[in-house]
Length: 270
Image (tube, rainbow, N blue to C red; front, side, top):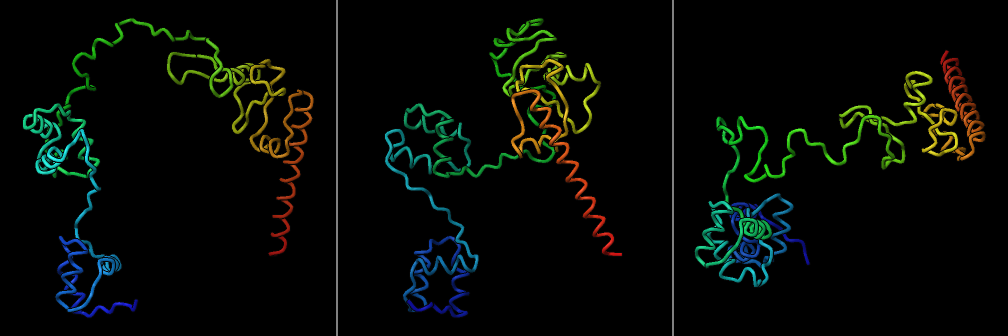
């Protein structure tokens, strides 16, 4: 098909008439006005290329439904504008003697993109309905409140040690949600002081439940990365100690090579 040439008159006509018309209607109008054969797809492509919109949105095809027969669907479409979903449900039920809920009407209008056009934003200077209220408690919710002094059945006493989903033992140190610390770190710090920044406590035998002090050692995260990279982590404590020495040596070698390279570049610039 030869490329369609749009004269300045045709361009101006399309721009003036695109609003509010389906592309099929506009194609017929352009064809009749200029005595040419214009297809819907050509008009659609032209409008898209020139960023022209008709301001219409396309409703999804609505299939017949036992829950929403044609007369119900038509009533909803004709009366949705300007009404809340609760008002529309009440109006619909009063008209047809049905029992539609607000949630059903809300779901239906959302599915078929039916808008009520209401602006529900809080206006400047308006007083929020919950001003001065702390939280919201619908009537009847007080029945499920804990009584004063009630202790939840799953509350753990301070000092409790539990295995959590991360595979580590944790000890409860206080009543706050964050007052839990990993048991192996607490044991190492009790013997050696605060854990150095950037260090981690490693289990020599790989068993996270074995928190005996002699099974714990600290390494840097860089050394841990080297152990993982070369598959040096073992389940034997002695082999792990040897692997840590290898990781430290590899790290020191890499650092020395890096410094040597920097000195070489510096001497080259001189």
